Length: 523
Image 1 (cartoon, rainbow, N blue to C red):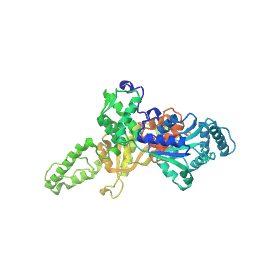
Image 2: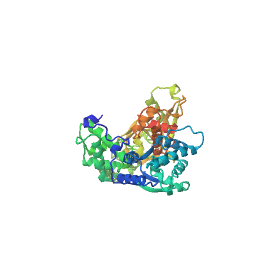
Image 3: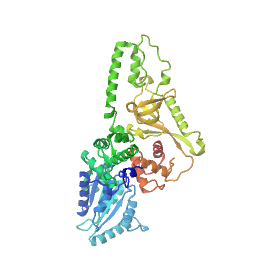
Image 4: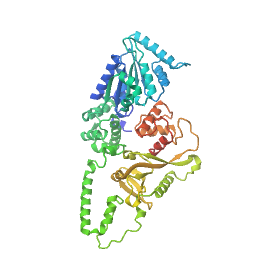
């Protein structure tokens, strides 16, 4: 959308691992040097680890262009494979094809060994690169160790690179993999970009994308990008792409700090980076503090007659912006106070959640194509609530004193940039701030999920979303999926990443719980 207006040939901050866009920061340069040293010196095993979005996949793709012409390479991205599937994939990557062997794995190993010996006799080398290696099973890792036994008396016939998240180190440390761990002679931990690297990273990608001198990121914008991303390349890409869109909408060639802040508000980690209040709302904090001090002083002067109202404020049952009682000598009690509370009991919150679902779904019969509704519950950290698109119910972090220990709920109709809209006991919508939600967040959330009564195939695994919709949602959330409608290997891998990020069972299949979470994040 913004490429033509801003003078780009292509979007410079795509999340795809394009080697052209690799910015060789100090850490990425060191990681590449470690890899080339281990391969050229035939060290056998090398492990590269780093956090999610640190640039490991792009580094692996870039490595291929640095290899000597005599080096044969095999690059494996789908790590959810068995030991036999691994051998088949290695043969395919080395151009050997997959013969219909009737025997066991030995025939695969013999074929690979024969290829490696011929390659070595011609003065060649071979490297096997496995990305997302933290997802490999111990059995598959043991099979990889057996591959490393293919060697001459002096030289390793194959060099094996294991690239994965930091969990890979924990996996290799288990006792059953001690022999493999001891064979890893070269290791490197890929760190995020330094603050000083962010400017070079952004300018490098803008230049590769064809932006030239037309687009500029202000100094304040770069500071805000680092504050949000903490140097993580994937997060930098996500926020920069959104900021360029904001610049396009405003008809500007310069990305300002305010544009970046607006972009940050749309992402899942805006609460984590900005837990309660950022610098923008600091002035608001000072105002609220002064206001509270004034109210407390007024309450002391007015006497004990008004202590109940201030208790309500401290409990958060009413927002500060509510109309304050007049200072009269006789204050009549407010009628039906419980009926207008936003802290709901089990029955009221469940009935309200169902009504919100019906209002959104329209008059659609549950028997016609939907099947039935399921109330799903998840443990969700507060930084992810901004990704929710459907009404949901939140258990309060602590029960109210008047509730006798029974759980109380907030019924969130929709998420807003400033917080959210909740439904009170009287059925009225009321706005609450982000700080208010954080204060009362109890992690247990639930919503209604429509499941189909029609049978689904094994790929869709009973998901209410078809493959294309799943891919679109994952793509929008920042996962590297192209919406093709085919449940291919890259989709399996990215579904598995999504599952791991949100604490689900990692199997690469969109089952009931994975589908219900994707449904919640779908417009």
